[in-house]
Length: 227
Image (tube, rainbow, N blue to C red):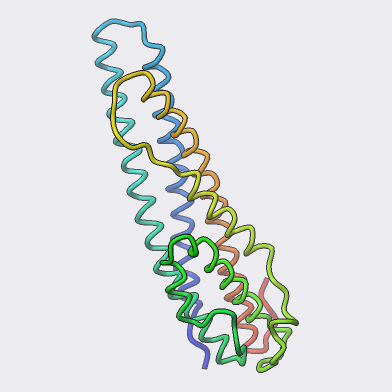
């Protein structure tokens, strides 16, 4: 009997769209702080105007902190839902006769928590889940891994996801000198760009989850894959 994955896929879809909205908000927050930094570095006004600029800077920092916090909540929620969904899809694949996968179902959990390897293993597992859900290959076919094709969609998602992790950087420490603010401006620019990549990754993951879910449902029901 197929384990239910439709509800998890729907929940992931909702959270991923929320993540897109949060990433847009975060990009705006970073760009806003860049604008404040530019004004600060070019400042030539009086004391009153300087205090106003300092207040803008504090508000910009608060906005970035809120965006960062919301992004963390979204990431953790996605991780939990995705792990559960992947585990169920992997177990369903075994029940469909997809024997001897490269990774046992337990790796859908453990693969996320091994440093450095977690940049590779989950992507490989998703490729296997894509192949294993191919409804054109009969259940129980011992040659399924050779017959099934991988997905460029999965590859693009994993590439953008890893890139978003690399691009979303953090500056450590504090300061009020020109060098500090120039570094902060550069890193905020990278982080704003990282949010755009994060948006692409979220949309691609949404498509991956939807496609695999529909393929596996078609595998078990014998019905055509819903576009």
